[in-house]
Image (tube, rainbow, N blue to C red; front, side, top):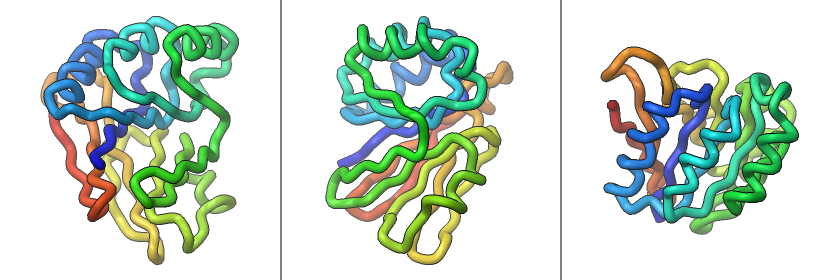
Length: 162
């Protein structure tokens, strides 16, 4: 099973359109958002994906929280405060926005930890856990944005630039 990973979309609808196109092309059916959506219209645009969509709220989502919750419900998405614990494809996954949150929730039983917040690419092991952040998903510089995809069968992470 391959999943999509995005975060820090920060209301950049042009980038969100690219994200939708990339995930549709790769036939991604499950997507995790690591927070900082910032406005409900981002979720409306992401709902064009025929994918299960889950995620955590980020620090920049506080001002729009109620509207984001309504949009998530309307779009049949599930968002929560981190950490979000998932068991997909036989893997135990933890999702947070700020990587500092991992200090309090990461255990050796987690196969994969996902975070956003830094806008920086990260792929490293913390003990038995693979930690992944695809990095900037919605910046203004063409070619510097990227989405992440993870093959849960072998925990292979890849990014696609746009």
